[in-house]
Length: 186
Image (tube, rainbow, N blue to C red; front, side, top):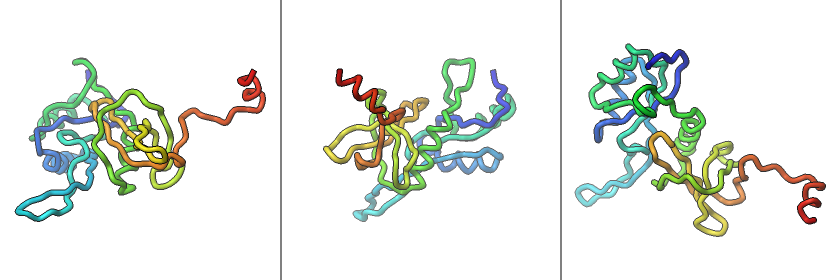
């Protein structure tokens, strides 16, 4: 079942509100945890203040080469429910591209919105700005602006950031050659 030689990212499902505690325990045991956070507003005792909250409540990511012993060490951490997998026979890593996109969004400090997990929409790549190179789905909200949706399929969750339509291009798109354009007109 478990025998990964190369480190990979895995999604870890946690007990409610255990994200920071588990992150600390993972670090203490030599794991590489990643807990993406966003700014949110909290109102307590009539005062509003900005706080940092997990981007994906109830989940964090861990990068590790998991053999049977490391897997058991991970599961023994208080607050860990399980490592997400496809089926019962093998762990399923989260693609590096998804983690890289989330890390880049987190580092850019842009406003992040919770978003329904989408499968449809056009896949685009950001051309300019702090998110250059990030790929995701575009959802049109307005004529000149839209939302770039980055999904983590393993979690069944997505996040969205506002993007200027001029800053993205369709993935796999290349300008047509003159001959192709002429052929299309015929």
